[in-house]
Image (cartoon, rainbow, N blue to C red):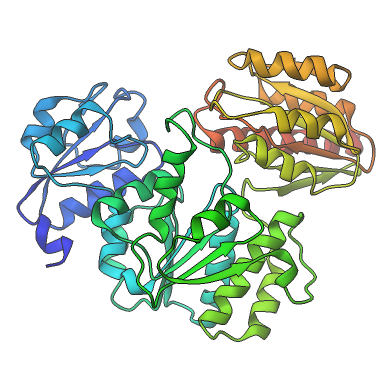
Length: 449
């Protein structure tokens, strides 16, 4: 029985409506397929105003709190991946024997053999977009993508599966948690790398790795795991995988002229190269697509070149490792916008990399009042590099612009979560883009006069 048939006439609770559009899309799909829907979220009605405006006026909701009675009411719960399994009402649902799903797990359940699942601490978005670009160039109209992409609903993908050749999914550790419940893994899986992350949610790295392992743990011997053999943790994890193991590293790439900066992006392209060989794709087409591919929004994205200065947006750099990778991608004099909120990740390697960097000229600390231990260590090790500590993106971009040399780079690669000053990392990235574009307008205006 398909899930569309299963929900008809059932009471379904969307647990965690969210602000990115996925919960709204799931709710609309459920209504379309005959379910009675209720939504719940810890955010208030005012905070969710835009999301609620897209739903029918008469839809039932509990906002600002989660209630046991909503769980007791529901036949099925669709859980936002951002909600941990330890959440009290989710624990209650399992105790009552209520089925708890994440929407993307339901999609893979119905299209496992068509699914290319991509996960990792870093690089999964770029790898997903490049994979989609390659496949869509060869099979136009037969490829869909989804998963950990803002604005996409998992359940709405179910209506598109019939004529699809491949389903390309970016999968976060939060989404993969539910795959363990269903003993479910995609037929084709890519593990880009594993570094410390989300230790504000996970008890330790072992728990984080366990969720990531769902990308391959339930494969069979004819499935494929493409993994980064130069990343120690990824290689160690892959050794226990039941499917066919396909290693990759940047040195396995053919001779290419890439627009994507950085060694880490060569690794991402190398993963897609191995996938192309597995799927017996035209490698000339791979080369063409890979060389034309520039960047993914908010991931080392070149926003503007102004007065000889390049402005790069890497707001999805929410870990120290990501900032190290970003900084090492450039050789020009660089002003770094750094900092944010706590994720309880180790930072010593980042401080060493900043101290030893040959191209880093200045650091602008953005917010960062909730990470005093890091700021203290940074001041002790790299105090001469810290130009200022500011509390808005406009100030950060303005100070960075004043500090940067001609021919240099302003790099937003924060290395931390965004919740001290912003709604999320995408809000942080949009504010950076706007601040940079405002600089451009000011510069253009002054030239005109």
